[in-house]
Structure formats: C-alpha cells, structure tokens
Image 1 (spheres, one colour):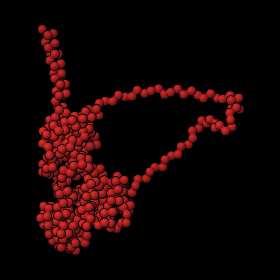
Image 2 (cartoon, one colour):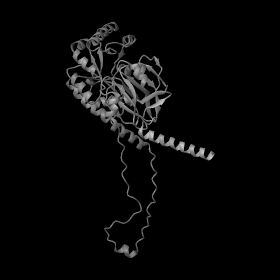
Image 3 (spheres, helix red, strand yellow):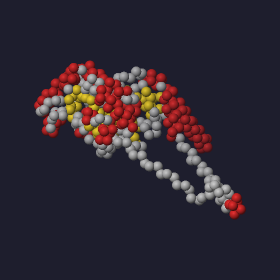
Amino acid sequence: MKRVLKMIGIAALCVAILMGIIATANGAPANVYLMAVNDRPMEMTAENMPMMVGGTLYVPYTMLSSRVTTINLGVSAQYNSTRRTVLVSSGQQGVVFDLQANNSYDIRSNPLNAHAVVRNSMVFLPIMWICNYFGNINCTLSRTNYGTLVRVTNSAVVLSDREFVDAANNQLKDNYNRYLSSIQPTATPVPTAAPTVRPTDRPSPSTSASRPSSAPRPSSTPAPTATPRPTEPPPGANAEVALAYRWGDQAEEAARLLEHANQRALFLFTPGEAAANDGLVRRLAAAGHTVGLVLTGETAEDCLAQAEEGAALLASAARYPLFIVEAPALDGDGQAALEQAGYVLWAPRLRGENYSSANGIMRELSGRRLNLVELTCDRAGLDLSRSLWNAMTNANCRVQQATAPLLSPAAD
C-alpha cells in the first residue's frame, strides 16, 4: 500500500511539473516583464527589465527618456552621472531622485515619499507613483503569452491595451526570445593546444656560404613597432549642456532643427515679444519646448511687474505657466527677490553672440558643472547653432532641456 501511495505521489509530482512546463510555454511567464511606450514596444534585456520591489513596480528611467524611446511623453527623465541624480520633469513640475542620499524632493526642496533603486548600473523609478504625481501619463499592466506587459502612455496613444497586444504580438514574441537567448549560459570554449614550434636548424657553413649576399639574415630580435600616440579628446568632451534660444526671426527654424534631432530647448521672449508672437509661443509650448521671459527692468520691482504681465500673456496665449526668467540688469539682491517670488533664473555663462565659431564655445565648456549656453535666433545664430550641434555630437556632450526643475537650486 505504501508503495502504491508512493508511486501515486511521484505520478502527481510529474503531472504538476508537466503542467508547469505547459503553463510556462503557453501562458505568460510570471517573472518576465515586457515594455512599451505608447504604441511602440521597447527592447527588454536582463539589465533593464522592470521589477517588483516590496509590491512596488519599478521601470528603467529610460522608459521616460525621449532620447531612448524617441517619444515625447510630456514627462522626461534625465540621469546625471556626476551628481548621481535622476530628474523627472514635465517642464512645470519636477522630482529629483538622489541615489546617494536615497531620497527624493521637488524643485522647492520639499521631501517626497519616493525612492529610486539601482540594479546592474541601471536606475529604476517607481512608475505608478510618478504617474500619480504628474497626472498626464498612465501606466497599465497586461498579461501576454510572453510575460506581463508594462505600458506607459499619454494622450497621444492610439491603440488600447488589448489592441496593442494583438497588433504587437510578433514583436513581443521576438523580444521575449531575444531575452531568453541573452540569459542562456554560454559554453566555455575549450582551449586549444598551441601549435608546436620547432626550432630553426642552424645552417651549415656551406649553406651560409651559398646564401646570396642580398638576402636578409635571420634575427631573433623582433622589429620595433611604433607605439600609437593617444588621441586627445576634443574640446568640451562629455560636457553637460543646457541651451536657450533668444527670440528672433529664425526662431521657427531653430525649433525645427531641434525637433529634427529629437531635442527641446528653452526659448526666451520679452513680454512684448511674447504678445506679438503668441502663435509661435503656442507652437513651441505644444511641441514640448520650455518658454521663458527676459525681464528688462533695472529694479526688482520693475522685473516683478514685468514677470506678472508676462505670466498673464503666456497663460492667455498658450495656457503656459511662467517659471523661468532672465533678468540681466539685476544684481544679486534683485535676483534673490525674483527667486523668493517663485521664479527660476536663467543666467547663461556662455552667449553665442560673443563667439565667432562653435570651437570657441566648445573650448569654454566645463566638465564639472552644467553649462548654460544662450544662442540668438537670427541667421548668424542659426549657423552657429548648426556648427555647435555637430561639435557637441562629436564631443559626446550630454544636452539637456533647460527646464525649471533642472535649473532650480534644488537640482544642484
């Protein structure tokens, strides 16, 4: 009887294992997460696969990076390797995740109850918390035949989750198979024996005598090889740069150049220029650029009055809140008054109008801080902008959109 029960137990165990194998083959593996942003599947690897930590879903910050996804969700994430922080920003709101202090705070330095985690050098963010905080993006989970699909979307999404899973089935399958292949243990190559080298027989005197005088003599000393000289990095290599464009008649073209490169920047107007170009202001705001004001007053009171007037203009023209201002005529006390009123100051260290070429700007870029560069939107400024973009690309510069959270002292 015991033997029969034992056999029944073994049979039941085999059935359970077999059912598990079938469920894994035909159903969704519970520990695999696929990714998509709007209607585009994202590549999944062992390093960037989303994960659950303490019941909280974490996704790689790259799902919110338009440079990686090529999709502008309206909420972007930028990693600063020098400060070891991740800035998540919508242009109006921002959250800084400090990896060293293991905390987070908003652009006013108010602490927040959220944390980032790091796995295999990849930074992961609590996506549901971020969706709730910003309010203009969503995250959904859907079961598929290849794992759980994590999908981050905004109002530009076209397909529902069910429609997307059906339409992208082959891509999700290919992604899952590539993931499985990447985590399979690879066989260690068997070392092959080195070929036996027989020593060269020493020639006999008669052989040496018959050798033509022009033949080279064998030598045991190898010929010296030239040591390659190390290549010096280009000026401004790996620098972190934020750009602003001062309004001019080429502002529309400057915006197109940026968008073609999947980049966004800060565009600056005086209140009068904003009122006269309200259509352009709406177009820039809708495309995801940052809009700020240049305040020409010579006192803090004058600048605050201009800022209030300009804020009303931006709200009326594009429903856009004013956060960033430039006040070149104010001293430190005047600028402090603007900051106390809730504005973030744009104070460029490098102005394109002071340089005759992009190389001059590149030589001034620092690798130890965020470089604020302001260009003009006239014909000369546009030509300089094109050259500067090429130079920054060759120097592997990290160009970040100038937003209020990025420029806020809280992000330093």
